Length: 235
Length: 235
Image (cartoon, rainbow over all chains, first blue to last red; front, side):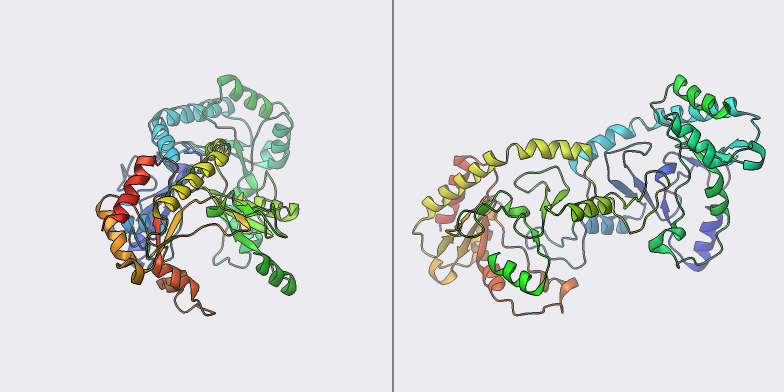
């Protein structure tokens, strides 16, 4: 983010973060110390879908400290009504507002965010300790300058060292009823976006081939986590 | 609708109804007898926003009896996922699904639809009787071939006969805390759509200048309705 912000400043660009999966994560050191994901750039976007660290059943939020832009966003998501009576629209609006019900649920969820992060971090520690030194498997850890919410625990599978492919391991877990997942398919390889690739993309491919996402839900018990680890080790 | 369907058949067109405000309304006579708004054409769209006759807090529904198209809609609103594991997307998808919470609320609301329509129709009858014969005011009634849900009671104000303009009457009601409304501003006059007018639009203008929408909520008491009528008559 520090490098991105520098480029943005140099070329007068506007930085919008899709920060959902990092909600609660923040910089713990350096120039950005204390800055939270979503509040580092000019605007941050958060999803509250059911699978996120906190949920409102659905919907999301845009955060910014720019009052004028916040008002413009509020105008656009509320159908772009210029007035309350004749409903003139100077711009094309959207019906993207939270319902009261979603907002109430979201508020109650925010109160639990710290607790959920604690649980997520404990999950990470458990996986890390149990898989420590296991040949060909490496859990992705937070960098030294950051505090991660560990929304999802991701394992890098090195096929040569592990002796089996990521997809084989994935298949083995799924056969035992354990919902492990690969990385999301890369955007530039999806049919609607083929031909839009504008620069070399190497790291994404590297990770896409090797990442195995492990069960990480807040509701998992120690026994659940142990079942995952046992299934991974039993080959 | 009968004329539209004929044109559609002749030119092989697909008919999509925005039927929200007519939910529960249906044909009571003629060739379309028994057909409900939203189920007359090929597809119907229903909004469950808070101001509609039934609500799910927000969101909406697409109805059709074409199974293949229904499946395609379900695919598109569910992020167009081709598979559950690698998330390939052949088309651009949308995150437009109801949440469980909204669906539960919607189901409970549907159970009340008939009751709500009864209340709405009673509101209409009250307004009609109280304003019967009042010079320059005419309540819009269902046509002889249809059963209306009377979601909104609309008055046509004839300025010459009434002796005052629609906007004057609107203003008078609002000053007394009664939320009457004009017709929604016409699309082709909104700034983003100016220049898109493709045919003569006359009736819409005629109504836009004369319509006054009266309070019609299900929660209104007889005393509330009486207050509205008294405010209209007291000039």
